Image 1 (cartoon, rainbow, N blue to C red):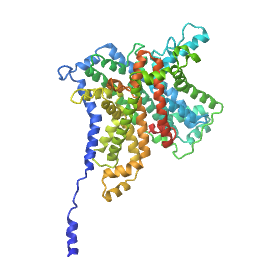
Image 2 (image 1 turned 180 degrees about the horizontal axis):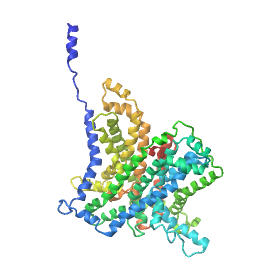
Image 3 (image 1 turned 135 degrees about the horizontal axis):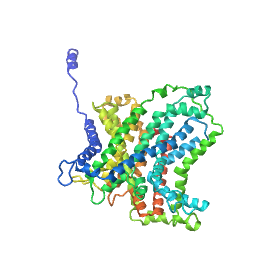
Image 4 (image 1 turned 60 degrees about the vertical axis):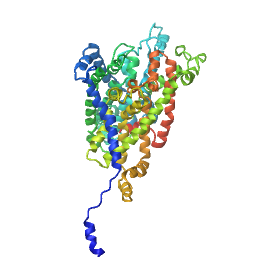
Length: 574
């Protein structure tokens, strides 16, 4: 009788039990919509909303582009982006070629110096160059007048060329990363063929090696262009005293008294449009890797012997490093330990007073550093958890619209920080949430800003993980959440640590979003540094900037120990 009942029992459909994990997936999707979609929708709606009546209007666009100086600011941004990108290419491409393809001495040191440039906040570099090339008391001008006897020096950081050079010096690592990654794929066979036909190493570089890496180089230049037009700190410190505006400084002025968020939203639209367009172009170019792979991905790669030219290339590497690292940090240190930075390097001018004042006497400086690390830590943790869950949904194809979720995670990459901040202001500053000036709105903004870093790392790691171990958990009665918590996360802990560090470090120095959202009790170190620059307190500013950098060093050490040397450069190259 039992045997006869078996076919009937087998014919019954299995009972479907409700998996509470789906509630978590729904919550994750809702949070993603809250962080990414809602601010963008509010930004667009606000740009068409009348301030007093709340009705539809085009007056905000008329106000945003109705004055010649507003148009000039937009044109200045585009010109600044192009100039900074070209200068970044001049700095980066020769270095990338020398490091990836030649026998230049101290290539590891060069990589380390590029990493030092990469982790230096652009506004810190701007402050250092104000000390170096200020039109009156800048050290380069003082040295020039001392040597030549001239009445004044030739350098003036408060100018368009000065701003372009400073931005290029702290954005060229992007071009270096892209170019080095491409050049390391090029087989020596192509260069050998050029040498057989009589080309020397320099001609081979121009005619063979660099053309093979051209899409990657152009991709890096586009990233530098976008970085330049979206920066706020460096333009605010240099362009405003020089009496010219760019888009980001003009947006900041719209947030003066009274706040004109509707006009700011309208004015931000071209910046967002240009960013999206160029990112699409960059993606199309960097996907064209076929002809590079055809050079022989498995071929031999030998360093090009430069002869005496190897020392010339090393000299160029040290020249770039001097502009980006050695000189700026030397004079930041001098200012930080000086009673008055203009009095020079004498022993009678040395003091720890600036550090004592910043840490123990200033009303908000020490608290701003604590705020920066607390908000960055919360943002990094939230972003890693959120992107791990989203990447798991997408990679394991748990929902039919997984591709859309992945797109939403990387979408903040094409939204400049100032535009994102204005979107958050429009969405969450008014009632009923009224989050303006709170720690929560800063954490949410930082989390959203750096979602792409977490998602790219989590997605790549999950794709390399065999799903059979997760299925074993399911067979033993565990839910997907259990598999994610007990199997996936422990196996990916190195990748998750790397993602956390790559989010935490830039979040501690984030200024473009913070400057629009902070309140009296939520000021972060980057905003504090900007305030000190406006007050002219360069000694205190230098001390605070160095404290921020020194506190970051242990995190870099942890990253290098856990993930290998140059982990930031190599991971960002993906």
